[in-house]
Image (cartoon, rainbow, N blue to C red; front, side, top):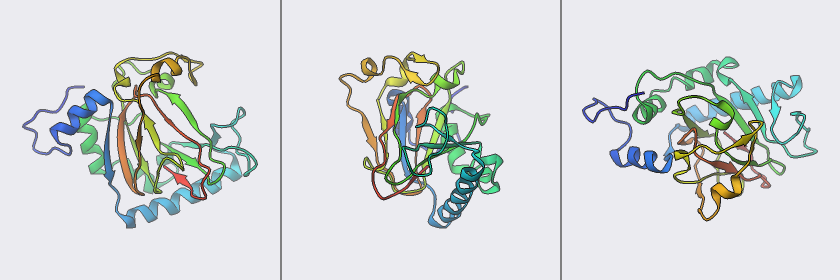
Length: 224
């Protein structure tokens, strides 16, 4: 995709932010959703996950069989295509601010690849190990960008995003699409950046940026 020109009538990001994204592979936006919008999203999020638990229409990324545990083991719960389960989340993927930032990063004519909800419950939320998203997606060219939205306050204790700056510039091998073979090599000697965000906060990252999230052992949920 072509990048936006400097004479564009609207620019959501500064030139420094877009240049940082190109060199680092991510950009932190901070608070994006207002509290009234956030309340609606949280209510709908909890409803959908409660329904999905009953029907097992979700995936536990911490379990080999993908099944939720009812609180007896680690859970890193994933629901794909929230926009197909809720009109509120369908509207969210058309949010003008989100799309403006995406356009600044990858250009116009934006297409949705997919959306997903990721839930680390309190006390037994499981980790996500180092990986590149495109290790799963295998898109060519590798020019996708993700918007990560936090619905709770997120810090290192309850599962904040850790990223390796500059790692988007090269692909790394994944086995079966779920295990990063050379993670120890890829992150050795590089200090990860930990992104703390408020509820309603956002960051954008490239599909090849190495990232991980630690487990959640706090008494707070981490909904994103």
